[in-house]
Image (tube, rainbow, N blue to C red; front, side, top):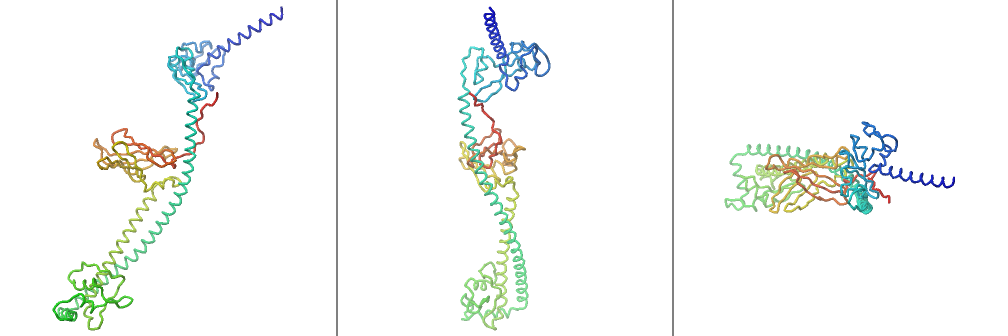
Amino acid sequence: ARTLLSAMHFQILFLTVLWCGFVDSRKIRGISSSYKRFYRERKSFLCIDGSKIIPFEQVNDDYCDCQDGSDEPGTSACPRGRFYCTNLGFRPHYIPSSRVNDGICDCCDASDEYNSHAHCQNTCWNLGQRERAYVEGQMRTLDEGLRLKQQLIEEGILLWREKQAQLRELQQAAEDLQIKLEEHRRRKHEADRLREQTLKALDNSTVSSIFQLLDRNKDGSITVDEVQARVALVHDEERILSEDEAVVILDITSYTRSPLFGSTQLLRCNNSALLFLLPFCFCLAVEMETTNLKKAEEAYETVNMEMSDLQKKLATDYGTDWEFLFLNSQCYKLKVYEYTYTLCPFNQVTQKNTAGTEVSLGKWGMWAGTPKNQYSQMVYENGEPCWQGGSRSTTVRLTCGTETALRSVKEPSKCQYIMDFQTPVACQPVLKQRGIHSEL
């Protein structure tokens, strides 16, 4: 009898455990593991917001007792309640409690429709597989992007050093040209002074004598051959005048010709009798110094323009490691319907239609990323005026990729454009990737 009683007592105890397990399982439905500590079965239940204490049997009884809806996590009784989808094999997430048992499958593990007519399939594993494959692909892209970024950083550092060296060379060239420029100005001033003094010292009869000396055949006119026969240029050694140089002497009333005198500094005549040719000689010297001065001024201006342009480029923020420097002087195009968009980083953004009309969508403004990553976004502003007022502007969002290319262009509001620009230098190391449940 004692054995029979013990067997019956065991069966009763076993059924009680099963029932309690069922009740406990029912009551904690829709709760994440981090919240299960609030739902340990006891005589009473404290609403999570601390506003009310209710008997524990009123938890998940399909009647809303707590203002925060914490007593009905597994039913749709509370308007502010949340149901937790465990979704083993995929990403867990919350849905509004109002969607529980509404006949629509919201959780991929079908746990939200435990008491409805809907026949939901558990699709978490398949969804998880697809997302895991996507994340793995993204991680491979990130790894390759970071590897390419490191190469571009190294290239950027070298390029930065090259540009710094180029700037120093230009600065030295500018200093040298400044000295030469001052010397040419001095020589030009001296040539002008000597020419004026010589012309004042000679009278009309002297000029007539010079003409007769040059006119070898006495035909009343002077030819290029006659000038070349009488006048010589002296530099390192005496040489005959070129035809162009002789023409300048003949064209004494107009000094618009620019013969190439090289570095000639002194003019003289072949014999002492022709010293009266000094006025003509000094006219040639002035012409030569004028030409040399103009060349020196042009060279000095060119070097200063190059130096100013390079200084402006070096003043631009190309990232903490100059990783964006390689984008300078590059342009990237993308055709969207009838428009071709061109992004020239650190310069401008343009839009061209099929008719060839080009419109400025903004000039380089600044970096405008987040505090954690200021280099994630560029702003180009002060483009051409918009017909509704204001000027066109473009925001360029940089994303990680193994190639550098313009991926998309949108115009979410009138004359305000958004571009997605992919490049390895936008890749950032990820310390912790958001996980996906891999439990079976």
